[in-house]
Image (cartoon, rainbow, N blue to C red):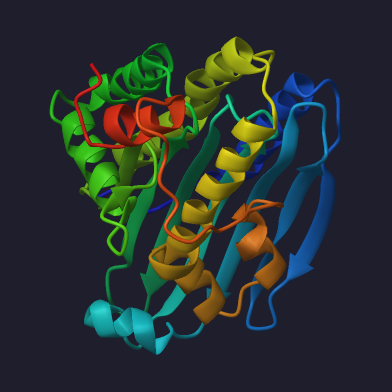
Length: 302
């Protein structure tokens, strides 16, 4: 087994954050990201970058974190008893982009590495991550491009990788209390720890590097699409589903809060404006109804 190279993973993640911020800023017309560096009382810290009120993006957050400690939170060891009594390190880049134009979808991506160690024992480690797309108004062309890019990223690692991680994404980004998908999916993987560390790391890098290839062409196609108050109100209503998922079901949010991470950074994924409406039902035959009937149900896009 290759021994995990923690420094190489951290270097990649910091560089990935830089490159994604540069490209998103450029797409927004040069609007800069504000940066906050923070430290975690129990060990570690990170740097949070947020672009707000840009010409294209209402809010885009790109967060790097590297936290560590002498022992895992009880919630984690309950699920993974082999982690008890081990020190841990968790590092990753997580980002969420909320465009202002309702025809440009929200996107999320995350790549991360975890390792737990104790003397005289092999380390327990794994990679995780993925990316997913949350449109408000669906376009088949965009959905197909998103999934074709995901499949292309996975192809060098085996024919079964894309179907497996697409299904995992569909299963994960599912709001059980609504019986509804959060968006049109993408890729999700966790606990990736085959004996070949370098191969696992290569895949994590491919996913991180491929996110903008999947997202920016969609942004370019939809950014000038005209919209009005109707579209805006539907976008704000659907953003409520994003909030519900993150606060009720998302494991990363829970892990960050339970390990004493910086709350502002953990919750930077929240949209800046959102609304809820009691028992809202889209008008039959409308573009809003088509999101529910044609795009949110799980399907094979390619």
